[in-house]
Amino acid sequence: MGLTKQNAATIPNAVVNQVINKNMTPIRAWREHLGLTQTEVARRLGISQSAYAQQGAKEPLRKATREKIAKALGIAPEQLAV
Image (cartoon, rainbow, N blue to C red; front, side, top):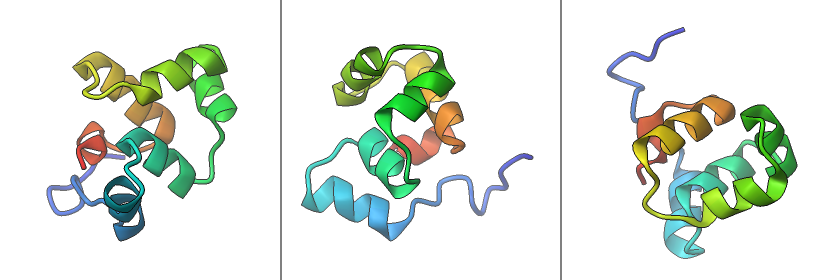
């Protein structure tokens, strides 16, 4: 399932609002928007919850890390660029 140019960078308003109004990282805003816990995303990444929490707090992310987290969230890496 590939993304088309039209929806490749689509970011829901709820995610953007969390990043801007609550000063959340895009990773956290997406995770909460998708209703996932840190533990669930960490499991998808094959890492501990504490390791995921550390990654989620860092900005900017390395490209490889951003791509792995985006895949675990089921979104395109570009969608983490809020």
